[in-house]
Amino acid sequence: MSDRAAAAELRDVHGPSALGGGRRRFFDLLWLMSVTEFKRTYFGTVLGYIWSLIRPLMLFGVLLFVFTQVFKVGSALPDYPVLLLLGIVLYTLFQEATTNAVTSVAAQEGVVRKTQFPRLVIPLTTVLTSSFNLCLNLLVVFVFILAWGVDPTWTWLLFPLAVATLLVLTCTVSMMLSVLYVRFRDVAIIWVVLAQVLFYATPVLYPIEFLHDPTIEQILMVNPLAVIFETVRVWILAEAQAPTAAEAAGGALNLLPAAAIYLGVCVFGVWIFNREAPRVAEDL
Image (cartoon, rainbow, N blue to C red; front, side, top):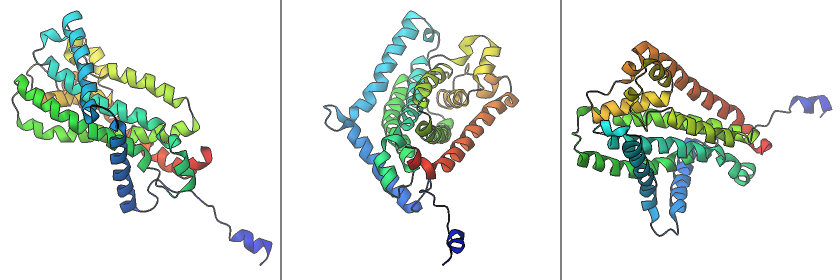
């Protein structure tokens, strides 16, 4: 065979794709790794899985004291403790999953380099593991909500839709951060700061109507997380004084920037992960 013919038969060789190995293998690995990671986190600890409940409850207790007794922000809102606890639990899912996802692919360097491994399993494992914690925490949250005297309404049935919206955003942000960190190690530091900024820019610690400035409220509602959290508040607490996301934004049309950012982040997260997944092993 001539050199020209041999050259003509050469083909580019790509690494495993995001879903390399088939969908069934992908979901089997995702479940196995998530369960293993969830068990490993609390293995050998005295309290075990109870730690997943204690952490948000301790933060809740500190913040409740500060914002009701020191700053007097929540003392004027009867259901403020419920709003605060629910917001902390939901934001913990987003922050914990995305922060752990940043270094997840790099931490699995040995697996990524040596095996035909579906890359997408790695960042999604962090999201699914955090979702296990969320399920345990929500049991406590809803017991607390009922004990506080909040009456269930039909809008509670919409709550899974809000959680699903939050999970989609969490997954795509995790995908984006995990592959960007492989190339740019500054991502870990930058995301710690951004996650903290997002926490304060989302109505978790404060009811959004307490800002008393329509302009600031509209600016905050550009944040997709703010829209999700305010919607959850309306659906779960059904407070007469609680504005809907559209009302806080100054009209339904003003929610378009938040929707555009949400869709943009999701599309970019999927695109960048699919583009970088086959070459991750080369960059590690």
